[in-house]
Length: 506
Image (cartoon, rainbow, N blue to C red; front, side, top):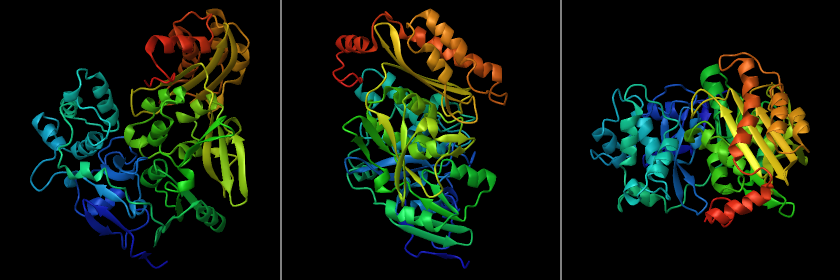
């Protein structure tokens, strides 16, 4: 194939239009930027775990403005940013004047070798420009501010400076100045998604304009590989040398980016192309179990790129989201040019990285029951608090009425070739009194669920022990009179806290 690239394909980088002409399809955004001489962003791990490659990308806000979003440039193909705006660490300051983030890092000793510093700068800048950020100087308590910064920087690793001066620099930042151009840019619309076709020796990259066009491409090209946030495909390209001949980007398809109520309000449909950060914001606390998942799922950098449909679609047995969705009795809406079908998530996985989804189908949305369980918990057992892969993940959703377990769903990850439901444990606990004795009996059964193995993350025996302990931990954490029903407990808690809608919002 003769190298060719659509002449109009380009990216706005630090305010300048940069054409993509002649760039191979599988060139990462990181390599493209470094090829322009913007060498601040670095490749550290090439899989989205270190954050040295972090850059800012303009993304649309629900209000119509722009959100400066930190993303891993090492995972995204440059072609995926066609028509978009990118700001690197070099583009933050004006001339020789340091940006406030850069200045605080320099003055507080937050940089030593400097390799990771530009990535920290961009992740910090994304939080700095977040509209509802509360600066330390404007609040008497710094606990919530510190937690926000910790999550904002959870995807950035430093191996020589240590995190204390970096966090100090972050917490010293006040609000952006009134004449800050990137702050002003938030009130303008983000660039719309554009249809893209890139053809080169190494393959073809296509971003269809809508869902119908995407499905037509899948019908026509049997070798097409679907890409959303590229947090999985990007690793395959970088570390395993994968070079798909035909890539179809679906991350900006409007039909896959909606959240709506369905079936007379019985379900919440969550568009498959929404990023995990966007899903967290859109659900706004309506699904308490997922609120426990988000802070433990990889890092903010990854959650800004990874999509809910993509995470389920990869069918990884060690993903954190699938166990929670299994516990919630989630369903998937699959769509093809021939129509739609609905599949319970519990019937979706068929083997290691295998599912019932046909080659020409896309996940259109994830359906969540609007009515939530009374008692929920998500336990992730891993070696690091943030940005790590689970050794075991356990999601529990239980309803207790008048002291009796009326309904129980338990999703497990890391103990089988697929994410699974702990069906034997559910049968053991359902209909039993919510007592220490019943919980202990069910915990012994839970420890025997799945087929855990020994690997570098954990032994099979450890995984089994953690399964049983997760149910015991839930029992202890309830900490209330267990004769109460879940609904009675919710009402009592609301009365004590002034929580008017039962979700923590006042």
